[in-house]
Image (tube, rainbow, N blue to C red; front, side, top):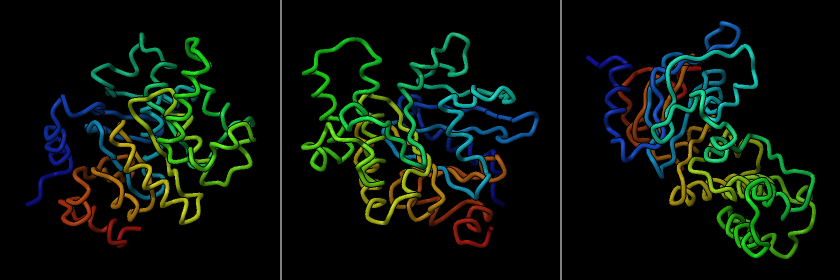
Length: 269
């Protein structure tokens, strides 16, 4: 007989030692105006790996991603219980500085959102909000961020042109560069390629694979082939619950639960 989901997830939680994980979610629930959106989620996110959240629309993937970045603070009807610990610190603690948390846990959304300014100023935006630095150092960081986002060679000769002149795929990589410039520890990606053409999507996927040497990535995607291609670990959510979580190869080729297999093979709508 298969173990129940909570037992499986507890087993995966113990699979990651404290030294390996950078984010631990413990019995976390979230509700809007009393309507539950996330239910008693427990999982551990390994450092310098890509973790994918998969599941049908409305299952809680993006809700969980936003909870990690505390974006639900903007909704007065949102309530939560349980704990999300980043490097051992409760992100919802009263003494947590939310602005610093969001610097260390950056987020990129589904639709590219470059600011109405030059390519250079987009990447420099977060740097200018931090302590003063020399133009030389700022220039070096901007080049590093654009290079890390696989965009430098395409824009180095037009840094002072409007970011809105870039293609959709370039704009998304620019937004990633803007986030990288402030040197986060975790990068949250909410369907980052869903609005892009196939070629741009492949560039974003290659970028995700390359970035895990520098930081930890958490990816929300409806595209299971994409999750299989780029992630190291996969969490399957349904109806606000964590159904199964483990190494991507195992989840996709030998899931422990019939419910997971039904979703992956398309039998669950």
